[in-house]
Structures are given as structure tokens and as C-alpha cells.
Image 1 (cartoon, rainbow, N blue to C red):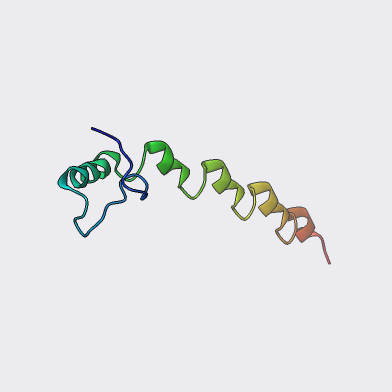
Image 2 (cartoon, rainbow, N blue to C red; image 1 turned 90 degrees about the horizontal axis):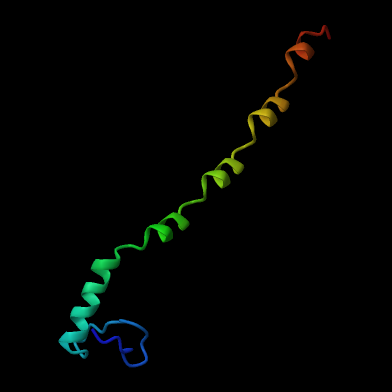
Length: 80
């Protein structure tokens, strides 16, 4: 399979007007069948974030959330 660039259009930027010759059309069709949406690495990269990042974006760690309550159990029980 000869990998020659199609005239100034980057790799396999196909033409729909049929100006390309069958050879190149078949090659382009097969390219996408093999690649699918991307390698496994690329797909992982495009997730919303790694597990760590997602945890970082929560409203806060369990400790922080406890800190933000109206008060500790002791404080709430104190007579006003």
C-alpha cells in the first residue's frame, strides 16, 4: 500500500466528487474501519478526567464537609 499524500490535502482527506481514483477511496474506507474511534489510550484521555481529578472536583472531602456543618455535636448541645 503506497502512502503518498493526496495532493495537498493531508492524509486521506477524501473527495466526494469521485476525483480520486478507486484505489484511494478504498484505502480511506479501510483506514477508518481499522482505527475505530481511536486507540484505547486516546479514549481514556478524552474522559472527563482521571479518577483523582473527579474526586478533586467534588464539593469537598468528607472532612471538609463535616467542618462546614452548623457545628460539632458538642457545640450544638451547649445551652445558648
